[in-house]
Image (tube, rainbow over all chains, first blue to last red):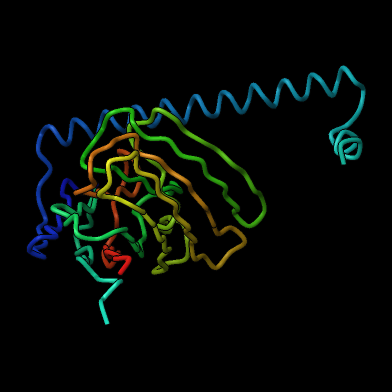
Length: 72
Length: 173
């Protein structure tokens, strides 16, 4: 992974390739962790919803296709 | 006739790749901003993100709808420290040397209300899967936008060589 960023100064048009500072590397790592946590939560929520749906279908004794037909 | 759609700045990523593209010192003399990105990334994740004014506080929210060739889905995020800007950077697993594209529209970027934006993006891939996405986003800040930073993914990967970003300003007269 590149430890550089591209900075475009719109007041001058100057383009610079700049090494990330220690703070920026730390921010990137914190971002990555926050992002991974958010993704994990999203996946967990999705799995919980799928489980709830499967449990409801089982309780009703119908398939997903039959439920779709009912709601259509 | 007045120029109402003006290129403010552009950049093409060099051989080493870049972890972000940062437009700084954006003048406040336009009405709206448009960012066009043609990009490919160094890893297999799907989404691109942005921040305004280097704000990494939990001040962003978005809603998105996506299609990938076989499925459609929607998602949202609130109180996030970054905002989804689309999926317009081709994944590394997509057909070699292809680039996705994204257009982000930011109205009233220099005003004192919270800043909304919309984006549309598509990928290019010689396979069944290729993504298309619409995003509505919000930055909950009254500050004028003077900086936009584009990320290939939050905390991961790079924009690869020949990825290009262009920032335009739009005047209403």
